[in-house]
Length: 420
Image (cartoon, rainbow, N blue to C red; front, side):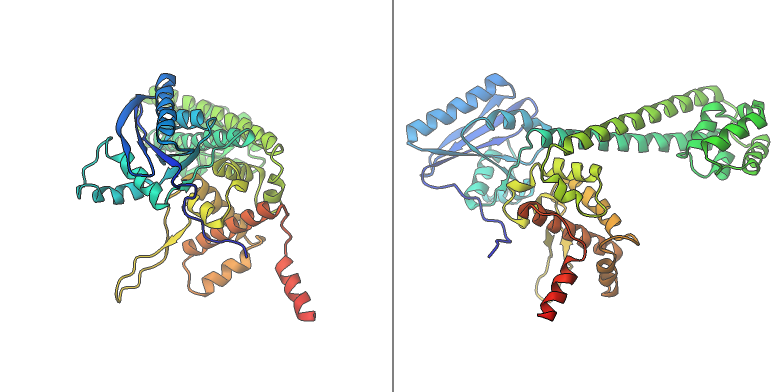
C-alpha cells in the first residue's frame, strides 16, 4: 500500500543533536539541544564564512562531548538570508529541515506563557517543533534544477516589472492623449506601441504623413489596424483634451518606458530559451511535458520551484510545499468551509493555477472534470483550485513511476474491466 500522508520528522533519537538557527540579515542566532535536555545558551554568529565555521565547530564539540552521532539542523522558512548558510551546511554530514513560521508563532507562547519574541527565544521554539516531529522536508535544488529556480524567479520579476511599466505607460497616455486609448483600446499591442514611439502627443501625430504611417501600421498590425481606424485617431488628435503643459517631459518618459518594455521582453525571451535548454538535462521532465497543456516554460518553472520531485516521498509533502493543502475551521454546530492553506511557495501555486486554466479550456484534457465540479455547485475559483491539486497529483505520480501521461487511460481501463 502506498503512503499518502507525510511521516513526522524521523531521525530524531537518543543519539541525535538538534541544532537550530534564527535567521538574520547580518547575524544569525544559533542553538544546540541534546536528547537528554541539556542545551547550549543561544548565541550569535555572523552571516559570513567565519561565523559559519564558528557554528559548525560548536556542533562538532557538542557531538564529541555528549557522545552523539547524528545532527538535525532546522530553520524557519525565510527569505534569501538563509541561503548562504544552507549551502554551506549541505556539504556537511547533517540533515537539514525547515519549520513553518506560523508554527513558530503559535508555539512561542508556551515558553514562559508569554508572547515575547526575541532572537534568543526563537531558536528554542524551532527546536521544540522539530522534537514534536513537525519539521518539513528541505529540498535544495542542485545542478540544472537550481538554475531553473533562479531563471523562473528572474522571469517572474521581469514579467511583473513589465506589467508595472505598462500601467505607468497607460497613465501617461491618458493624461497626454486620452483619446488614444479610446481608439486603440490597448497600449500593449505592437501597433499602439509603434504609434506611441513615433508620435506620443496629438501634435506629433498630426505632423506625421498619414499615408506613410498608415502603411507602416498596416504591416506591423498585420492588417488589424485599418485606415478608417487610423483616420479616427487623427480626428481625435485634432480635438484632444490632453494637457498642454509638461508635454515634452511626458513624451520623453513614454519613449523611455517603451524602450524598457522592449528590453524586458528580450530578456524574458532569452530566459525562456535558457529554461528550455536546461529542461532537456532533467530526465523526468519528459513525464511532465507528456501532459497536454503543460509547455516547457511551465514545466521548467515547476521543477525549479519544487527542486526535485523525486525527493518527496508522499503527495502530502509536495501539496504542502505548494500551499494547496486543505483546512477548515469547525466548532460545535458551526461547519467551516474547506480552503487551501496558501502556506507554501506562492510562485509554484501560481504556475499550477495557470496550468489548470489550460487544462479546462475547450480542448483541455480536464474540461469535463471541471464542468462536473461546476454542476455540483462548486464556484469557478474553487473548481480551478481543485484542478490544480489534481494536476499536481498527476505530475507527482508520473515522476514517481517514471511514466508518461496517456490521455483516456482511465476510460480504457474501466472498459477493459467491464469486458472482463
